[in-house]
Length: 246
Image 1 (cartoon, helix red, strand yellow):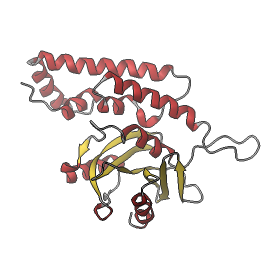
Image 2 (cartoon, rainbow, N blue to C red; image 1 turned 90 degrees about the vertical axis):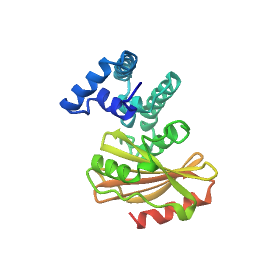
Image 3 (tube, rainbow, N blue to C red; image 1 turned 90 degrees about the horizontal axis):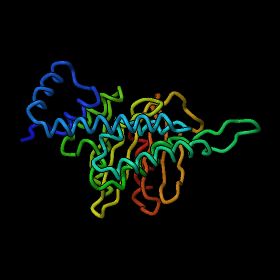
Image 4 (tube, rainbow, N blue to C red; image 1 turned 135 degrees about the vertical axis):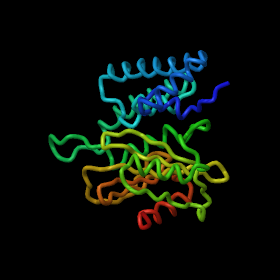
């Protein structure tokens, strides 16, 4: 019987366990050949995916690095879809923002990575998050620890959205926290936080991205974004309220 949960296995594959916990886990894996073979397959998936990303002619989206993608994958179809999304983001970031004068380099729109993260994970009905809302205190402490700052998760209950859970992503600015909320009718809205080495002017704004709308702002060395469906009035109400409460 498998007495080892997926979270511990993923931490082992990612190299996030200390020596004592690794030794204990390896002893248990030795007694469970089927589970040991599964872990070996995860490692091989990670190796192949890393090689594919390194061969890309443009840099892959940093928030979709192999460790992050692997934790969200359970089937080959999902892995391929996320890899394609990373390539598309790399190309898209080269044209976002437009030219700012002759000879200027294109800049991505503020918090464009929050929009791409929403597009990749919001539609995942199997595992859009790593920690569920039932682990609320652990989730908040886990995300805050990785971000390196206290993080109070917004309460969107008055707008009809309940906390679904959250996951960590890797970006060029550092770790990012992606938190999802879900309404009774299945709509999802995300709250996204990451460090930011620069603070653009203006430091707050709203942007329409196809069917999505994004409210972004920067404060005290961090970037924030709320992403949701543009055709949902609750999205705009939440976007208007959150910057004043964070």
